[in-house]
Length: 254
Length: 254
DNA sequence: GAGTGGTCTAGACCACAGA
DNA sequence: CTGTGGTCTAGACCACTCG
Picture (spheres, rainbow over the protein chains, first blue to last red):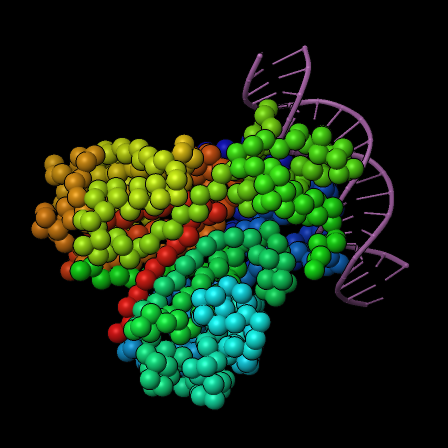
């Protein structure tokens, strides 16, 4: 069953991983220093550094210059898209409901920081919305989502300013059912949503904003909502450390 | 705009990436050898090796011992889940239709290798199906999907043997509409599907089967289909090199 | 066997955190 | 200032491919 006979750094990474999963290095604790691990495993510190890089990429540990590496707490979060598109579920859950409920159920403390402002949308978003990227043509709702002070997701929503200027969508509090319900109230019901998801390395900016290493991949989701005429009402981008999320969708067939 | 001032290997990775994207190193071509690149960039071969590792992780190049590294052809494929759950779309597309149509449209040649046999399901699958993992209790349909001889996906389907023994599901050819339509024909219509998607590093076995590096992450999708009584009729796992796929879902809202 | 990528070491130095 | 992780080098050797 031992396949990793090939290289020391992989073997060491696997052994440390096993120690983390067995609880020998508990969640949130410090690992020994790299030189100490080098003595322990009879290899050079450079090799330990490389082994820890593997674990960093998996989201299992976090490394920072100047302090010892720490084992990451791992809250695996299920994002169930279906819950967001059923009006009943939306209003049952309340405003920021689905996320809060998930995190609380996992025994963590949810928190969401929200900033709303008029802004120039990024080029890709402007193109989808059919507005100018050079002008202040959108309302941006920028959310940073936490679980126990770990950033779990960046979610940036953009809606066209010409449709929603001076509406409740410029408020931080949107009320029950969130943006989808408010748009319906305002006479612009969303009728169709397309979500594209990819896995990729983070941009340097994303890595910094999420507080993760550049080796650690993210799930990137682009959410586009349309009205009955096919006009784009909302574009939301989600950036999530890949190891923190399970993306779930449910379908009824025919 | 230059953020990567910090380390030589990141800078070099970015410069080589730029050369690939500009066409200086065309898709499918060979990169210079690592020692040659080391001379070019005035660094050690070890540093070049590390830079190339970054590009490998992104799926931009492929490295193999003994031969020069090559620039990967990149067919970005959109997998639209919605198309698989509309009977009309299913039958319009034909048996292995959605995938073939996608790849052909991108100018590549699709190919799917299919093996069907009775098998012991993996533990996780057995649990979902409610059958034994120690006995031959399932029909396995193992697919390897290609685009121009590049493996794009491994898709393993399992259905319970007690329901579908000696039916058309034991044939390689399923006919129009695929497994979903055949199950309906056989009196076991699927009514609900749950798909979970995660990004993660491949297992060593997956990396080998896909012909990718272990640094290169995959999208892993677990597809579970239920009948009206809530019994699981099918479990399919998909393993895809992350950089090759865009996962798309569409929803109608209320 | 020659060429290529992959790994490892010993040692050095840098960047950063914290007392 | 000390301890920590991050990077780089020079050189070595290994594993693999191909002629």
